[in-house]
Image (cartoon, rainbow, N blue to C red):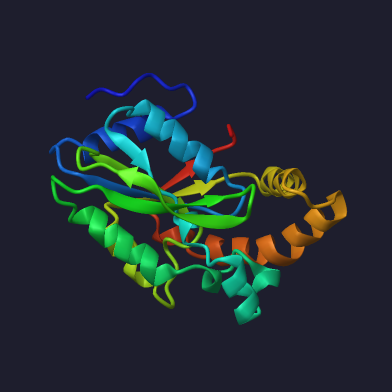
Amino acid sequence: MPPVSTPNVPDACLARVRALLHDGQRKLLGLVGPPGAGKSTFAEALRAAFDGVAQVVPMDGFHLANVELQRLGRSHRKGAPDTFDSAGYAALLQRLRSQRPDEIVYAPEFRREIEEPIAGAIPVFPRTQLVITEGNYLLLDHGHWPAVAPLLDEVWYVDVDDALRQERLTRRHEQFGRSRQEAIDWVANTDEPNAQRIAATRHRAQLVVRWDSA
């Protein structure tokens, strides 16, 4: 199916997806990048470009619940690699690779308005040819994260100017209840250490996409 014209998505990216889908088989495309890079916006733009054959399944649905983060003493650094169920995420990707034609696979979704994951919120249908999954740690090389990349047909790194990315993050934190200073502190002390960790995985991506449009 030819993609709809989408001005926000570079033509080279559309062509690359068309090449991935040429054999008619399901493909899993990963989008990785630091917090605030615009991964979810880019994922949605790609989904719209291939409307009818693509779905988005974010990694963020595998955030540990707040009650579990409190038990583990990790609430103050929510968003770090060990605040996700990485093994569960890899298991979902494996299911999506081997989904039966009569099966709906349900994925969790993270709801920012309540800062909690919701189980079974995203139905992935067997007719879906392109699954776009986006998240911070798709190329990480420790814990259960190394199981993720081999399950993806390609991983693209979403790159953006750091100042723009940090301002996006600050506004996002303010939107969901933090004061301006609290948002700035969270970006500096929590988001940026994670961003540096993610940037170190950039060389493992098959493609780097500059994305300042979100």
